[in-house]
Length: 82
Image (cartoon, rainbow, N blue to C red):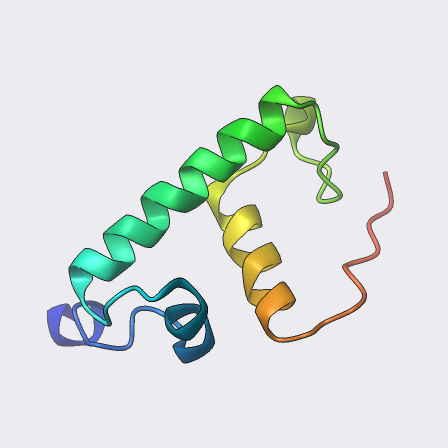
């Protein structure tokens, strides 16, 4: 388990390319901190979360997925019924 979790593939190659972060645990930690910061900011700006989280909260995973979709050129987000 430790070998899988601490592999050099923690960050997607496109995310690494766009961010310039190293493919290491440090790069993953820095990316996670960045995503936490973005989640906090979109919450402060009261930008609605299409995932229907309680009180419109943004989770780090929501930001990670949005950025992953963006760098991969996905044009449509999930359809969520509220």
